[in-house]
Image (cartoon, rainbow, N blue to C red):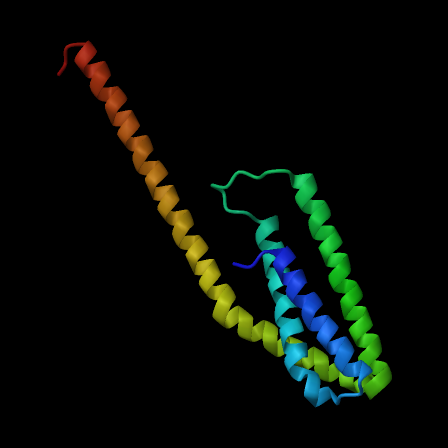
Length: 157
């Protein structure tokens, strides 16, 4: 799965392409590819942020403060990009064009959720169940071993 920093990097490159396209006077239809990339990156960032906030039970967290500050900074950067794109598009093409951008972003988010995020969530669930079962079996085996040695010590075996 993509991490938040990579998602912000992808969003930044798409943002720069959108900004250049608007600066040279390209039509909104000509920059929909970049808008789509930007929307995917925003969606990936939101998903990665949610995954970091809710890590699997078997992972030990590092520095929560460092992660929180990093996510906060990246979220602010994404928010600034969104506001600038909104300003550019609303100024250049009118306020109704921003609704079109929001529609494109919603489509990207829905598509990513159906394709990529569902697979990532299934993979995470599979790993969690596998690790859980292995830990449970190791616990049962440990208890059985302790019981065996206690029984052997008491002369019952």
